[in-house]
Image (cartoon, rainbow, N blue to C red):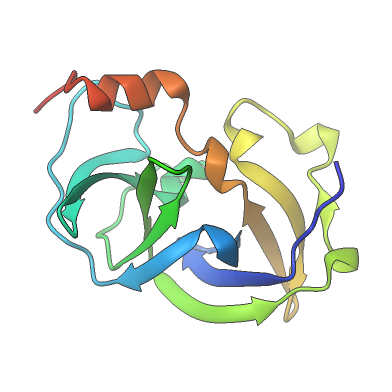
Length: 154
């Protein structure tokens, strides 16, 4: 699969520098109240009502394997499909950047695991490791169905 990335939103999740292709990004905002759900993976913080619509809140640092949960300081809302969106909880939004796709590479097979399905590529930006997230794979179909049916509530 050839990577087609030009403009990305760059943010920090714990100590990771991350990016999401700009076409997925709806907006960035201060975090809104989040209602926790039990029986969800550790990276799903709950649901938040954003502009009248419930959005699952995904902790970007936990998604990348960080164990400790930190206070949510920013949301980046993403369009996952025509009918679904998520709020990505991040530490800091750094802004929109142009990326040269030739500086990125797909995840090496040595680093691929079940959790890394959400990572599309790695590269560097300003001398730091940059992880490009695959927005459409952050939540499995099973988790979506559970949230939509109201299972695992409080």
